[in-house]
Length: 475
Ligand code: ADP
Ligand code: GLC
Image (cartoon, rainbow, N blue to C red; front, side):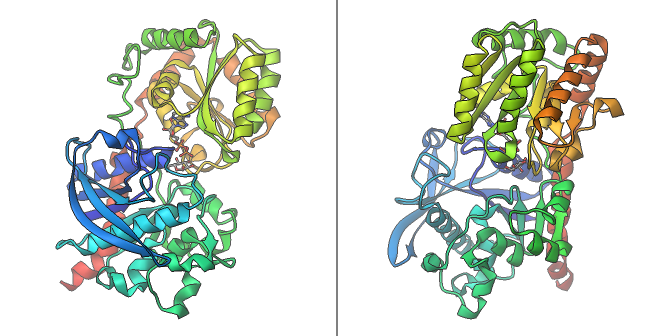
């Protein structure tokens, strides 16, 4: 089967969070089971993309609100990442260093989607399935079925994966000129609450919808930042498929970012070396239990409540904390303040640092994830793989993957993103930590848990098969 993914992120070239990890891995695993999967990514002006060799494979232009933009598609040729990667460049729009955060993001992503579709139209061999991810690529199923410009693609099945329904990419109808021509009477497909809402549009127009965990699928029908009614209405075409992890990239045996590599029989000694290095870098005592946090500093991750809980817990018990994150400036400030007030107990790095995230999974004893919303969550799966015990709020994918130690599981869970509950979870972790034999046994089990993409890739492949089946039956 020939599958094309459209995404705003793809590891190792452009990653802001888990979306990048998923799109950098799923295509590779699909190809390993015999499919031909490629990825289309905007050509950002990022260092990770500047050093690659690439060949020009398509040149065009795109007219957005009466302005013409020069556009090209390049294929990355020098790196074997397990799938063909195509970079979609729109001059003046995609060529910026950051993935998100510009005033004209709506225009940037519409341009990416339109040029990507033009590129597909120019191929002799059309894909069997087009797979789009989140709102940044959510207008593709609409354009493929409604816009005469893309008539040739209208019968190709489309699949939308919702990684995060908090972000929907809405923009006013006045910007409708960003889109190619479509029948005016079908404008309702674009609309949600008086705005053009790319995520809602994709839910309405994609052939199938997946969410990144089964529990998140259920939760979305109750709370989806205004889209719950739509998701309940479309429930019959929605499925929850839990993400996997790339066990090649995330492998403590070979991870180039680690001071000491390790496997299940050598983890205790090696993790101690990694912990010592991490602690020394942040002026923390490596003999004390170490709790980590890694994440985007946004409301969904519960970082605000975490700071409150940590203050209370640090005043009561002996433990250290390492914080890695960036995002909301007010939350960044609170992280910084915490590390200044609790010098020698709290270390913080404000920013995005891939290498440090690996060091934290491989050196911290526990990883805190008090998320209010967590569609899947990959951090807890990386934590398992590296033998670091996750402490999670039971929501979304965290609920689907982490069972409490009191129930024979491998993590500490709490019901709500609430300071008192986080403090109690920390207390339970601290009580368990000194039971070294039991703790090591859990670490070993964590490292042996199989969350590889191999399983999830098969689930996606059977969904794709279901979508193309009617046509293959006709043949
Ligand atoms: P989300 O996609 O909501 O951010 P996930 O748990 O799915 O959450 O994935 C987060 C990914 O981003 C993980 O690979 C995590 O290690 C990484 N990450 C998040 N923040 C940072 C950071 N500040 N520096 C390095 N890696 C980070
Ligand atoms: C989103 C979600 C996260 C999920 C990731 C990958 O960013 O917030 O929970 O793991 O996408 O699907």
